[in-house]
Image (cartoon, rainbow, N blue to C red; front, side, top):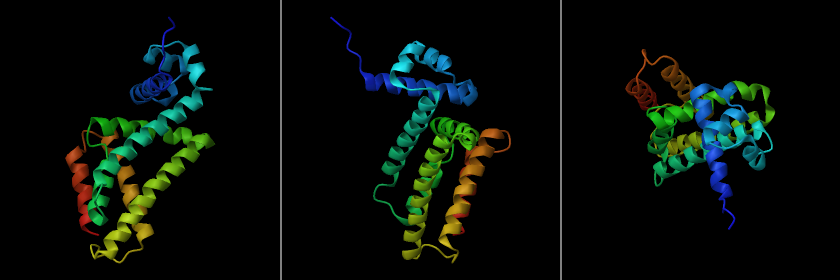
Length: 194
């Protein structure tokens, strides 16, 4: 009797393996051979599911984004304005092991995206969705009278997202200087000033 293979599950396993390699060893180390070894498969299995290494990397990034989006959607269900904004921004900071790995994965793609237009397009689209959510929650907060500042909301959204990126990098790069509670405090102080 032939072995029944769950192709979707095998694809997810390969993408999870690719993410682990990238987080642990860096994106340059994420060769098809390293990914196959991490997943416990041969290179031939990878070739059956993905056209090339770039497709694996792109799919791993998208899988991570879907997981993050699903978690955030659950966290902000029924929330609006500053409460929802707070949850979205805090969820995008590497304040626990899972989010630290997600941030490491994301940051690993940044430099590669500068030279690979397909990756850059995905990064831009995903970042655009996050920016749109932040902007919408700011608009809701303004309409509800939760904002005291009269700043342009597009500018505020950019500052908040830049703060998320900067704090995330600092927390990952300088763990002796910053702790998760410091990063959370800095973000909450910024939100309080709005």
